[in-house]
Image 1 (cartoon, helix red, strand yellow):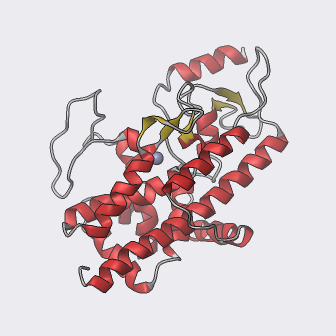
Image 2 (image 1 turned 120 degrees about the horizontal axis):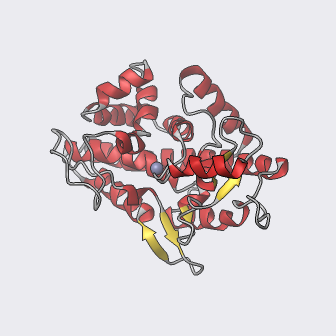
Length: 295
Ligand SMILES: [Zn+2]
């Protein structure tokens, strides 16, 4: 019976998951925000204020605080997946242009990269896009481009730290692997990718509780080396070895207590690493602009 229910569940969820959930993104963003100087925070807040969806972020955050808006902006690249103003390239016709946005594509391929055993990319562009968006933010004088690039950079630096975002091509980054998870009463059967995406906490985490969780994570893990995009990508890919539960023959692999604990530890550590790295990357970009007088 379990199997039948399970099969039915999946029959109606054809969309691929491709991101830490919103809690993971907001935690990463909040940690990053704390790494920025007050001058850089001001510059970033002004750039985000130029984004056409800025009023929506204020509404969702129930706040006008710059840190809360920054955290809200980090989930924007996932929010547009369900937004009819945007379209999925190759599957839908392009939607009408939106004032203030360079394009209305969902860019699903930007969220991940699949690599082969030798580390060669097979699909997805997350590493290339992080580098491109950093260059835009570093050098562009176009306000529209800057406010478009920012939410994407916040989002993708977090995503590249999720092990299954640098996944195996043959199982679509764990999207075709089904698991049984006795520790989640709400979702006891899930895709392995979704299990990992949901580890950071409930997606409605905001405000005071978000700040408390971020503080707890910072206290638990030391600041990571900065490294570079290639290193972040390779770390995630190496962690794949720990990302799959034991195979169980003809039955679904089941998440054990030990596996669940280890997966939470990895997810929490990766969020802290992503937060520090995103913060330092943005600080370097913005302080360079400010000192050049192109802010
Ligand atoms: Zn994503």
